[in-house]
Image (tube, rainbow, N blue to C red; front, side, top):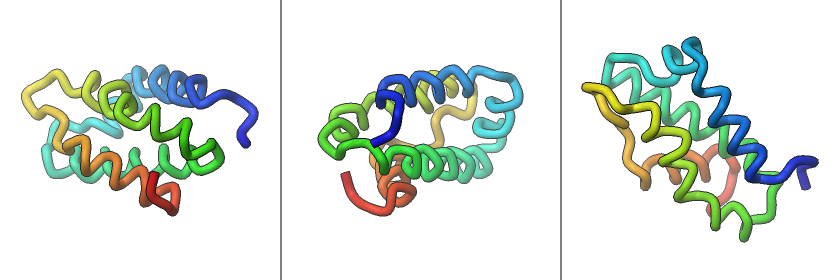
Length: 98
């Protein structure tokens, strides 16, 4: 299992996404590009989740969408990805279903 807790991992990601560079990279103002980048982010996050117990990840899954996506999309474009698509990309990144 990973050294830090799952909550610490998600919290660190949440804080990292607050930087102007991360926001510009992951949440661009073009809807199609934003869709692509959010799915890329989900796969990266999912890769990091693979070392945590599946039961713990399942409890945290729904919250990752609001914490890592929705809170950064209060603009004219919006999230561009729904929660189901986000979780599917997380699973893709982890290499297994949660």
